[in-house]
Image 1 (cartoon, helix red, strand yellow):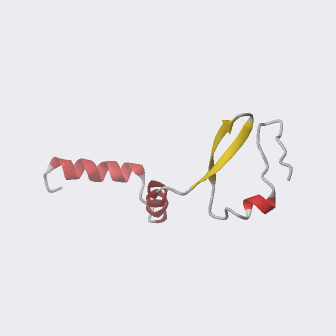
Image 2 (tube, one colour):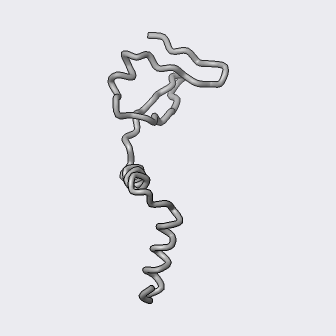
Image 3 (cartoon, one colour):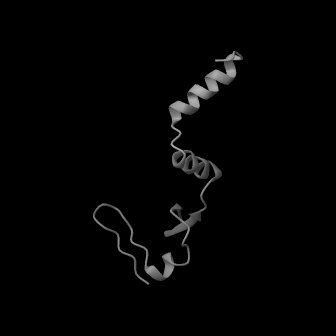
Length: 76
């Protein structure tokens, strides 16, 4: 199968290959002896947490405020 490298250094993966990794968004890219190796990366638990927080409308600022409150040891 062929994959085309665009002028913006983007590589299009053939559908037959991409279909084998339906849940993958990111690949680790390495080289070995002139070969390009793509290793699928699974979604990290941190990414799952960020997505869930976004669903609930909780921002990074909200988390910072909660941590500050918890560290203060004072009822606010």
